Image (cartoon, rainbow, N blue to C red; front, side):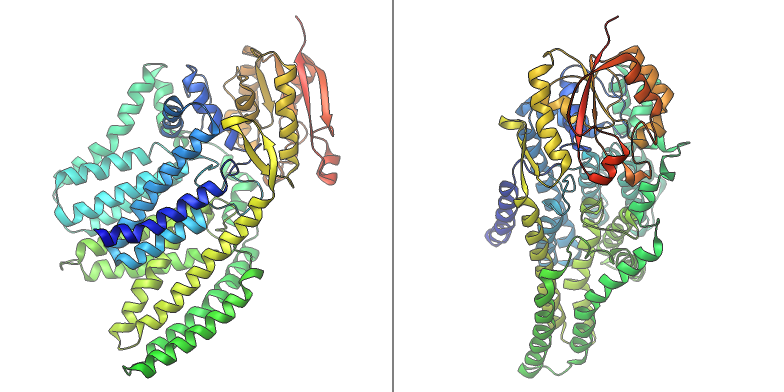
Amino acid sequence: MTRRIAAILPLVALGLALFLRNRGGWADPLIDFGRELYLPWRINEGEALYRDIAYLDGPFSPYWNALAFRIGGVSVSTLEWANLGVVAAAAALFHALLRRIGGWLPAWVGVAAFLSIFAFNLIGRGGNMNWIAPYSHGITHGIAWALLALWFLGRHLASRRAVELAGVGLALGMALLTKPEVGAAAGLAVGVGFLAGGPRSAKPFVLLAGCTAFPAILATTLLALEMPLSTALTGTLGGWAHLAGSDVSDLHFYQWVMGLDRPERSLRLMGQQGMLWALVLVPSFAVALSLKTPGRKREGVGAAVASMLLLLTGASWAALDWGEFIRPLAPCAALFAAFAANAAWRARASVDAPRAALQLAFATFSLALLLKVLFQPVLWGYSFALAAPALLTMVLALVHGIPAFIDRRGGFGWMFRSASLALIAIACAGCLVQSEGMRAAKTVAIGRGNDRMVADERLGAAKMMSRLVPWVERNLPADASLVVMPEGVGLNYWTRRPNPTPHLNFVPPEVVIFGEAEMLADLRAAPPDYVALVHRDTREYLLPLFGIDYGRGLRDWVHADYELMTRVGAAPLRPDRLEDGRTGFEVWERRSR
């Protein structure tokens, strides 16, 4: 026990140091994260998801964050500390899963990589691509619940106890209340692992299905206390309800996220990064496999070759873009899943069957999560969460699986393991240094006290929000209502001015899903006292400007029913802003009736 604590303490210290180093500097002030602050605040003010606020995902995360606000107070700081707890839970579950599959070394190294590369990632100017201020809490909460389901699955496969199978179902059911891509990956992984664990009667399937359905039934029941049953059911279904019959997946942004907008470019970049991996790993593997004579000579040759390769890698590490280095993950994760499937098949009648089935389930989960970022897993995108399990499968292979394979064939597995460990350490250091460079540029302050955050001074949106928040606080009545278009509900949160309509964002996905006509009807039914038009470049959707390329009716409504009160900075949402990069905002006041 003492040794375990001593081994874990450096990981705890690493996580706390990285967290405290960037307090208040994790999020984008304009895009996405403002919604994650606004929702729990309004829930604590008596509003309900789906009835009062249009929301696209399952109900777990906003209500969980509302509970955190109720306990710790409504503030950015409260949410940061709550999310540090999510990081700790995910790290503990990663450690437990990797230790059960491959032992203490890949478990320790995997958690160190998770903390250094993913959890506190600042690569990318905006923010939001980390576990402390994620663009959507559903993705981090969902992965944590999925890991808990896999942990229970591993225990159940070894014990066959019903109570642990119930834990699998309940945790999986909670994951299904977050984001569709996470819930689907978790369900597939549990199903594969469950079936790979050996023959079953019908009774365990019934128990698993019933426990999986229970969180959804409970959520629907609780929501139905505040809204019609049909609305509650749609809310519980979350993203699944909106994906059906919606054209949102046709938006260019989601093709770009997957790397399918320019697949030849994505494959070329994947190949380039893969070559960098291969430059170290392939020679290390070949030499380690060829060193079949025991003794100091073998160890000396192995150490010399590994050192030479890693010196070459280390010499170039500062020049690498570490946000790109995980691009080869998809084919590597697929290969690992294939080997895991073979191992599970070969071990199906042995005492090693539970471990092999759990390894296959974890590999399946890792590969399924990557489908959303298939050819473009990058740390400045959704891969801060979606690629974490896949990279940890690579750690498992590099530190445990491949060295064991080499040893079984009489080679020198520790030579390859040493090279792999050093390569992982270089990658962790590279990501930390690149994140530190981004942290140093976060000097623009927004909000104050426990709500203070800092943003990248190179972002026009950061400077715009730093002026807009105090302007609204000084010039708009404390009880005024406000709508921000096309995006920026964080302004509502920081100034504590509510949005009286269900719609928080007016960017292309929301306009496609809810429809501009419905949005207009809701705005007319509950018109805000003020509308802020802020500059938000939406070229990622191939629809650059709100009011010109989309949302024309919404902007026309503002111009017809409101009068310009003030303009600060450059006039927003004009084509010349796309060229000169200047930002600004306008505040419009409702005409007296």
